[in-house]
Amino acid sequence: MVATVPVAVAALLAAASPASAGTIGSAGAGDPYFPLAGNGGYHVVHYDLKLHYDPETEHLDGTAVLTARATQRLTRFDLDLDGLKVTGLTVDHVKAGYRRDGQELVVTPRTALPGGREFRVTVTYSGRPGPVTDPDGSLDGWIPTSDGAFVAGEPQGAMTWFPANGHPEDKSSYDFAITVPEGTTAVANGVYLGSRTAGGRTTFRWSQPEPMAAYLATATVGKFQVQQYTTRDGLKVFNAVDPREASAAARVLKKLPSVLEWESKLFGPYPFRAAGAIVDHAPKVGYALETQGRPLYDSAPSVSTLVHESAHQWFGDSVSLTRWKDIWLNEGFATYAEWLYAEQHGGPSAQKTFDDLYARRAGDSLWAFPPGDPGSGENIFAAPVYNRGAMTLHELRRAVGDPVFFRILRAWAACHRHGHGTTGQFTALAKRISGRNLDGLFHTWLYGRGKPDRP
Ligand code: ARG
Ligand code: ZN
Image 1 (spheres, rainbow, N blue to C red):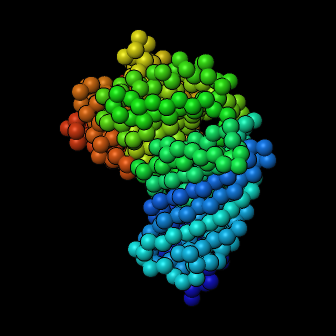
Image 2: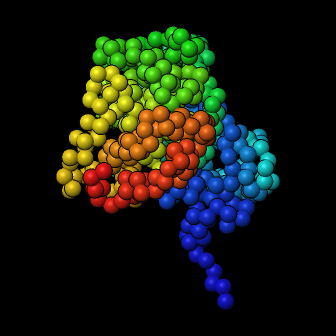
């Protein structure tokens, strides 16, 4: 006899295996580290976000228009939205049913959506957005500042300011129109389309045409000094800098074109048509984020942080994760870019950086877990992911030699450009291009417990 499955268990099953979900889109993308992040049953092709934000009252009004494609027949599907109040919701311009369930906004369209159908969801919402606290205790999402908001969504904060399919497995193009009080600037991703001021408010328009994961979207608001120029390569640069950080930032930001040029030589063509930086003054944040095309810094960055966030444009932004477990593909690569930059610009060799790290005693937190298997969302931004991830690439470089190593990095960026890549795909590519059996190396450095034996 088949027992009735309790509702909570059924929901878990649906979240765990989208294939078994029937006509109900699952509540998560199936990522064990963040089970409710993302959703099943559809792909968002495009987000059109219209936001009004008042830094004084910290009030946000939003209209999000999502153009999506059903990947299965859908009688119901979820969006991720944390906090805020939904004031209206239509599917294909027809009022749809909806309810809130934690971070899930559960939508029931008037009529079922056939698999393959493109549909449009319009959500109007408002409230006072705030960040989420991540498993490691850090904040991400909409983080109010003294003059606006620092908006960074890795890994799960996109849902704090727009209804999203909030997992990097789903990538989409974006348009933004952000209205703020006159004198304040709103900076998002991609190409700046201009601003218009009326009645004491200014609307800033932005367009991000290349596919972007929701966590890389930003709509950072503040009193910024703006600098715009076009590089020799025809890349449009838009920098926004908090005046309190301006003098420290200027020295570093003037290197942005040369850093991007240097990285383009190593990794292949820069993947986006716009670039720049947002340098905010957000002391309680404690990190920078590689927001697509225009990294976001909580204070004036060092050159190596600039190099790191820029390298993410290739590794993390253009080539995205399918699972958070593979985070070393982002952080290990961006960290190794820092080592390479130092090596080629009068700093220590990558070998020296490796050796200094390797000298750490066996009980050091660097060896707490292997980078290929962080174990939980709590560990995704910890030292083993960044440093031992970079050490893995260094060992690969030593094993195959510089020409082959850089060929592998360029092939990785090229083959998965504007798409996704997994650890398994990377190790297979490295083996194929080098013609070497690298199983032992990857096994030791990516998956071995504790401190690896001396290489
Ligand atoms: N990816 C960022 C970096 O470049 C780190 C983001 C950290 N996010 C967080 N919620 N702690 O290193
Ligand atoms: Zn990083």
